[in-house]
Amino acid sequence: MAVAAAATTTSAVADSFTLRIAAGHPAAPLASVNQLQKTFVPNVTKRVAAETDHKVRFIEGYGGTIANLFEVLESTQKGLVDIGAMCSCFEPTKLFVHNMNYFNPFISGDPKIMGPTSRQIHKEFDYFYKVFSDNYNQTYIANGAFDDYGLGTKFPWTKMEELKGVKIGAAGPNLPWLDYAGAAKVQTNLNEVYNALQSGVFSGVVIFPAPYFGFKFGEVAKYYTTMGWGSVVAYPVTVNNDTWAKLPDSVKKIITEETAVYNVAVEDEGVRKFSSALVNLKKQGVTVRDLGDEERGKMARVIEPWVNEKAAEYEAKGFPGKATFRRLMELAVENGATPVHKYNIK
Image 1 (cartoon, rainbow, N blue to C red):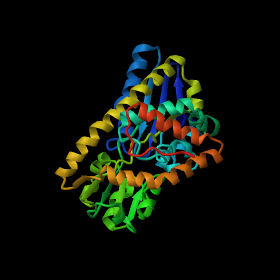
Image 2: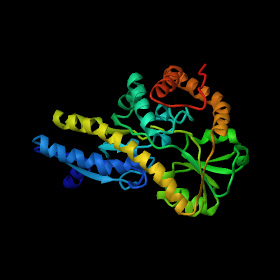
Image 3: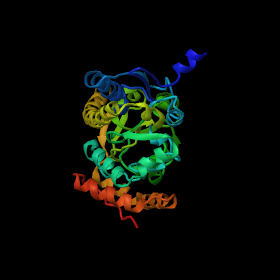
């Protein structure tokens, strides 16, 4: 029993550390998880061995093998997971503030713009860090931006009005994007989309092109529209505070440095996969089209009252939402974004 108990906690034997790292999504289709496996874990392992007197061994649990999509935050809080990667989209209450990009759509679909912009916002408004440290016994260390969201459907369409009454699946905080098209919203996640599309639970899904191709959704929904809803920073990576306190400063330094490398790797993969996935979807027999700026602008203007509602919701929770949202738009434009509409946050 003593051996079993020891196996479930972070172990430190002399100068060796075993760290469990987990995500609810599988690695290959999602850059945020893929780059943990391909970049972060091997880089930290090699550098700790080469640059310090210590060793780090990772136990990797992706695709829900240690904690599922809805358990990573709590599992990291309890110390069952040492480093957790979680989508804030599945924690709409506890990680409400980290869904900021979902609440400000149509700014930019470029991860190389929205990643650095959003992380700068997080630094300027430290409540993005405090929500983890004050409430969930975690330190927020990384967050790379996804590529641009689009819409896959089982039928062709050209105007948003054609989606009225149609059942569309989305992760959660992006469901209101569909309110203004009159669509019927269904909350879902990547792990269940294929069967839901195939069985008719819903007829479309809000998703990036890379996982749309990677999960083979094009086999059952043959139309994909690039919507320009935007790139989001919504997959925070955190470390359990008790684990963090046990690590030597030299190891912490390497982990911190490698989180910056990881962020860039996630965004580079997102840029690559966005273009290649659209090509691959066409090869798969999927009809790919762009919504166009006219429809995008119409959607952005119609959705503005909701953006203001979310800013007010931040304020009601004690966070400076209005200042945050205004600064997000301002900084994104400074970094190269050309939004189809600039929200007037009142």
